[in-house]
Length: 208
Image 1 (tube, rainbow, N blue to C red):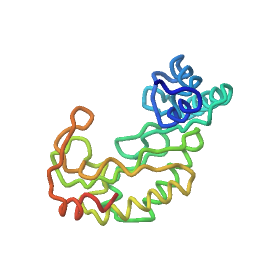
Image 2 (tube, rainbow, N blue to C red):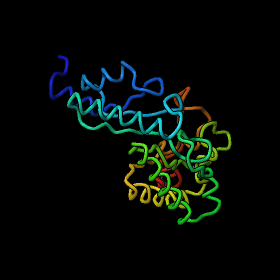
Image 3 (cartoon, one colour):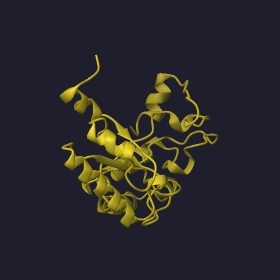
Image 4 (cartoon, rainbow, N blue to C red):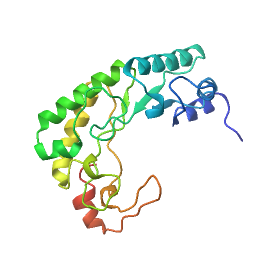
């Protein structure tokens, strides 16, 4: 039996979707009005400059309010280094911070990132990357990780998350334990990790 009424609205809150273009599409406004979505994730296709992003997020939130839906969670990938959506303050990759080993530098970058995201109506950042970069053949992690030392990654990742969330932006510990030791692009295939549990508990799990 299809979900109806309040049940549909509650289910919709679990979904975060994207859409095409720098302004709200007919499809996304319909989904919001129907209660079929609780959050929006923005990609390069949605972003031109900070002013445009602020206008976009404001338009989406005004529409949600007009159709009596809860405020939307708006998310983005703003890791620093090669993975950024907004071209504001440019920070180096996580691996550079890992090489520096400074908690204070990590915290400062997270604080500025949170401030810039909040200024344009974004309250959820898909960062930091806590994968342990233990496989040189990994095609997607590389410099996005703080390095190959689980203790260092756990320490710096915790500092980044604490600072970002203190700045009013939700952080994400990503991607998944073991993803740093895969040789496949998880955008294109489903990597598997065959390590025994004791190895996972010693290396892959600690940062998470």
